[in-house]
Amino acid sequence: MTHKTRDRACILSLGLCIVTTLAHAEDWPNWRGPRYDGSSNETNFKKSWTDDLKKLWDLPIGSAYSGISVVGNRAYTCGIEKDKQTLFCIDVNNGKIIWKSPIEDNFKNEWGNGSRGTPTVNDSRVYIMGANGTVCCFEAADGKKVWSREFSNRPMWGYSSSVLIHDDLAIITPGGKDGAVRALKKSTGREAWHCGDDDSPGYSTPYPFSFDGRDYVVSFLGTGAIIADIKTGKEVARIPWKTDWNVNAATPIYHKGYLWLGSGYRTGCGVFKLSKAGDQIDAEEVWKSSVMLNKFQTPVLHDGKLYAFDERAFKCVDFKTGKLEWRERGENGTIILADGQLITLTEKGRLRIGKAPESGFTPTGEADILDDRCWTVPTLSNGKLYARNLERVVCYDLSE
Image (cartoon, rainbow, N blue to C red):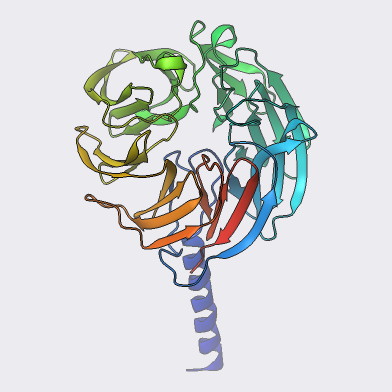
């Protein structure tokens, strides 16, 4: 082999290594990740360990239930600064704050103060809805405010939904006279469309899906779900769903023509088969039961099974039939999915990782990474795991 041939081979090998590494890394730019389903395409992360996990940083940030969005070397989440709900931009490598921008006055509540929504990062801008109803757009580079809008139909426990960005639209669920579902131009904040004028807001984030060649958004509101054409805002279906205190908080799940809805407070969950009816959509109930009571925890769907913590236990339920496959009593918690692995975080801060099973969960990796009230879903991005309780954000190295 000549020197030139060997050099070309080395360069090719290095290039393939870089491509392979990049293929195993993925940003997490918004609520429930890049596909809005609580999953990551990452594969090259620790599923088990013998030594303690390496903590990269631990940042006190102030009260919020806001999730952590990650794009490149920056993480975005909310906290409190000078009694204001505040958006923070954090360097993922060292936990230092790059910039911080106020959203609105603090929201105070017996179950925890501050923002509930998760930042949405799109086209070098960051979008967030505060718990009192202010929607803001900031420059991702420096936190400069681009525009803001205020809405005034705050539900009892504060606005909790995140902003959905689809093409040139920023879709929110302000409720009532502000329009139960409202699409704003993401560049200016001006209204593009709205629907559902008389519907109270829920606590769920709008969810996009494609069905029969068209794009739709389903919004889980206080008393039911509305499906609208995502481009025009035309309402095409409505599914009544009454829950105590109007707490419909879990994000809907669409899969191959079927739509899942779920809530707690003795209501339960169900699956509906969608079919076209002219320019409308029919939603036929397939099953509905109290097999899973998702007060705020959205399941992940893997190989036809729903995995989630509910009010009572950690459960696996068949998506198509509603059959309970197994359950594990214990702490409440949240869950994401990557490489066929369930990544769970209990409300007392215990991380558990293991294969998504059909008969009982046996974690291969466990560690206590936080304490206090951990109700926020963790984030996996580029080999790092991000988690938080009400007051602190932590980052651990899970890279192999």
